[in-house]
Length: 529
Image (cartoon, rainbow, N blue to C red; front, side):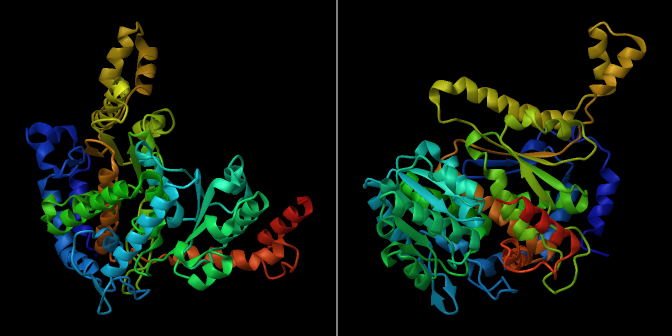
């Protein structure tokens, strides 16, 4: 028996009931929602009722989520497989007190690094630098790239570009058209050994040297390996480190966010941090039944572990949040894509879901067909701002809002065969053809969704959103009994790539490789120039 068995039995008893029927009480939307500041999380368009919510909240107590949360914020080493604290929250602890790790307060170092970042950002913003190229991968790329796009209305600094893929096309296309004399390159790698990042960094350094730039002055590093950054030729004053208690996918709040700070300025970056800090305080203070991260996590547990829905679609109705689904893919799937529990046993249930999505309304003309009429139920998570940044295009934003709300309503409401038949009859169809055409226009409905709404996508709000999802990952991980803060699953492929490189280069035989890999190496070698 697992901790979810009682909930699975409850779900089986109510799985066929209509979500729409749950709105027979006038206060459902208010009861099944949570608010912090001016942000609203509505989960009323799900199959949850008071009994199931109470049962889910019992999981929070059973897993001792509040104590685990407090341990994280206190600097205890909750990343047990790596013997590390988990303190990305300290990076946005602008107004809080001391945070202790191994008996030492980490906050003076956090504030010192932030002050150095502010000074460097102001220096770059007032210089002749026109473009910034951030070279990183994974958390060193996805977070700042997503945030820079999301906050583009606040850009008043140099243009920002992001290179992550070791495919030469990525850096070639990025550098083409830039002026090497007015470009700053930021190399983001904690260890300064990440092979993709360092390969791209060396290419960028050669490009700058060959085209009249000065790498000694125009390179910065986000790394703790100052011996390696020095060997690379980067001045210590332009190196910004962060501790091992900041995981890559949680690192946009500190030095990894330097490109964002340069783009929007230190003041706006501080507002971004304050948004994250505000969500931290809500997460720590709000009761579970009013706690937005806990409720978002419990909805996720209900849909994935209880209902068996294997994926979730993140659907921001904001073009500037177009990279949020990609960011959340790493945040959630690298964190909770595990099959081993904290005690070393194999999980007897599915853990993290597949996370995907795209900005609305583009997705409506791509994959919404499957969401509405496909054979699999896909819970949807909508995001929508009450206001856009273009006052002269308010009619666009109202249409965007109408589309967002219409999609969640349509997923819930659906269209019955009778309603579809009436539509076809109104078009003059009769008999078997009417029935055939009507069946193609039936929407099963009863498909769950949540909506996160806020006044405007500004730096503070983006900070709230990212912190909300970070804490959602934490709560789900604690309930599932896994470590959300290691990522051993990415290591094996890296190791094999290292061993394969000399084989691909023709410097070693493929004798110890399986037949498929050896044949592919031979085919590629035959056709390589």
